Length: 248
Image (tube, rainbow, N blue to C red; front, side):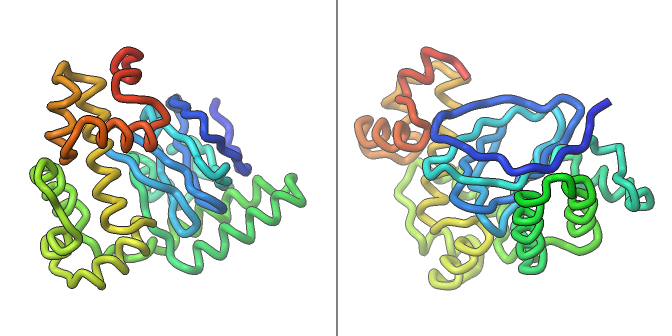
């Protein structure tokens, strides 16, 4: 039977990929940035954000700045002591993979628990229940960005030049407010998020199709194959041709 575990993970710039059978994983940012890629999405985990990874969902990850995260491994259908009455809420929380912002109280709790289990690791079990209850008992930070609408726009228009104003208009925000909410909810600037989406799409096309690399570059909004190769290699730590040769 899967066991619940709460500890601090330290990440390197070496890319890895795996899935967790029978267990969900909650990854809370502490220090630095963890890059994550899921089947159809991805993003960054930093302080104030959590990645919820459903059982058996394959994900790739690495950190350029040796980031640290507080990680909770838990079976979705096994409530922790004291949380038996919230089993249905726990199942709903852990049944799909997503990246979410945290509210200030949750962020402070995570920082405190990380310090606690670093010095007193035997308190991890009690801390796990407290941490999970913070997500079940109160909402995460309210989203101001219409993320589904924004992502659809980027996916359908990424071949053409896009600026902050184009993205802000889709969200019904001024450029300055859009930049503010991107930083707060996505952990990066609007153009950095656009670049992430383009390179995630490029990776999918390389891994699961046979289009020429030059065509993929154009479809993903890059004016030249060399610019695309440079950006792709920086993001994924390998070239487009190397990924294609190696598969997923």
